Image 1: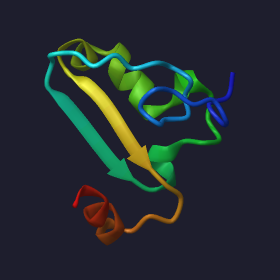
Image 2 (image 1 turned 180 degrees about the vertical axis):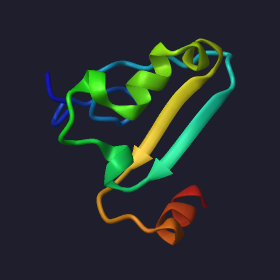
Image 3 (image 1 turned 30 degrees about the horizontal axis):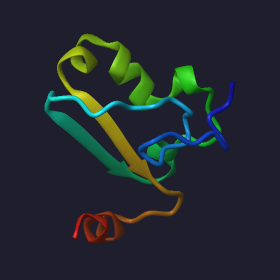
Length: 78
């Protein structure tokens, strides 16, 4: 199953609903490497983190867009 075109409740394209929990969250901002539109869901960076011991302690959220530059990511946070 490809992640492309399958939305979720957080605006991601992996098709996996992400419940809001009381755990601390980690947000990874980046370019197409974080976006991962061309990868299978199981190969995505965030999926691997969520399935690791790290993902049991923290929520993992990602926001990536092809061509993003660090300054654009910084503006996203404003």
